[in-house]
Image (cartoon, rainbow, N blue to C red; front, side):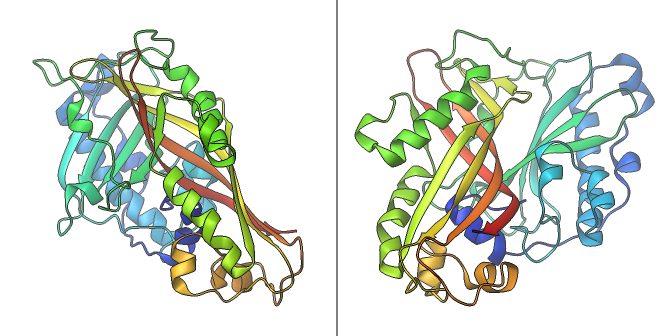
Length: 339
């Protein structure tokens, strides 16, 4: 549940807050008899599953144990090392404007996407959850959670463009769909190449992608030297299940994963461990909480690297062939180290 403005992710992971409360996910997320019998989850059942899941999610977050996390999370969400109130990102309390997007799937695993936003916030500062059920009567688990910040460049993609049929069902998209700008199965590798090149050799960045993160990372790289740090960030393709829904007018909304290494390298012993908050917020220097309380650093040295390992959860709007893939992602911390 880490905010992902990238490197700013590594920063914001440590300085934002979250809240909690709920019951066990097996109870909260189990399908009713009709859903289990038919194999097809209905939109009404998905609304009920999601409402009960949120209650379980909040309680597990408050408990802050790996066992509690395992009752509501799966995949990359379960790898997150900071599933606790206080450092997990925006609070997930009661969500307003909840909408569900349920693909026609009679086999397992079944899945659906749900969106919502805090009652006091605009929808652009909302949440998108991807819930997955592995087998009949298995719990519904959170396989991805992304959230926006209501700022230009950091707003979530618009899932209201998902095409729904007369019964309110969405259409799943196959991994190898060649009608799209990039087949969903190729997005993890394609995005990683784009991102890495866009940061290291901007003029040579592959066409066909945009990211909410690249402009901010370039700014952080330029600003880092003022505080004695070189900012670095690289993406790696990750093999995983891809979830995609057809959009009206063609194209698809695609959930996929990458792995990430991000952090700062000290140019000299003069690199500051107490940068101003503006530098921390912009990702130009490590936050004091990370360097001092988490990594127990008392001074810098030339070549010191503060390295974060993350798994990134992406939601890309993948247009018809010939278009540009627009990508948004949040990062979830696996761990930080100083070397």
